[in-house]
Amino acid sequence: MLPQQASNNKKYFLLAAVSAAMSIIFSVMSAPFIRVLAATKSKIFWLVGIVFVSSLFFLKMNLVAIYVGTIWMTLGLYSELEKKGITWKKSGALSVLAGVAFGAISFLAITKWSVDHELFKQVIDPLMVSLKQVLPEENFETKAVMMFMPGLLASALISALAVSLVFEAQIFQAFQIKRERLASGLKWLEFRLPDMFIWVSLFSFLFSVVETPFHFLQVIAINLAVVSIISFFFQGISVFEFAMRIFRVGRITKLLLYLLIITWALPVITVLGFADYWVDFRRHMRKKVKVS
Image (cartoon, rainbow, N blue to C red; front, side, top):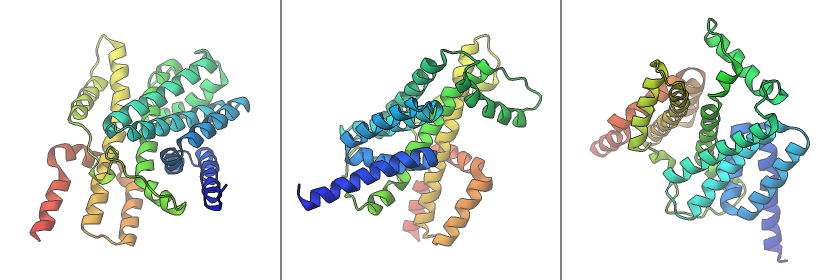
């Protein structure tokens, strides 16, 4: 084996080890590492993913195994579809659906849909506590809360995918890996949700609050509303970052603004992303810069 090839292999296996460790320790923030591994060394990515997730199941770390498996599945499939030239819209939707399917099938296979299973309690108890804090007068049943888990999981996977696309360049640079440019790749500063999505989200918000005789319709609507909120948030973030770059905001100011977003302005950024569908802030900012 040539010295250069041996060096590259060590680099990729180090990336694989870091990706696995980060996925347990830092959850969504591990996504850029996993993304870079999937985009560069597909065979190593899938081999490490299968062995790693299987080991977690073997060690009875079922909840961690399911969550890591969903992220690995989502980012891996997205990269595979991207390499085949499929647009980011289709790749993103299919990969998130695949991740949710993996999570649902794994969860049901382990719990057999028994609310007395320990895994049920690990998932539901923290969520029930959060819901009680927000709506203390409501009585939530375990199975009712579980109906909304697909939307929450999909939101987490969308977050992982978004974070991976935002920070992948830094990871490529840190590991000195050359990034292959793909025509189907998403430029996240230009991220804009499809036109159809806005109407789906509007109907989901409507049926989330309107009582109907069809309970399943409201369940679907609430799940879609949760996904819509996180999706509009990331569109808002792309608008915000575009503005920071086009107006050349300094690093310290940008850092302070992001801290403000994290601690207080999350809803504001979500509204910004929602409004961008009609206003198209980036188009107006480009015009303003050209005029000045």
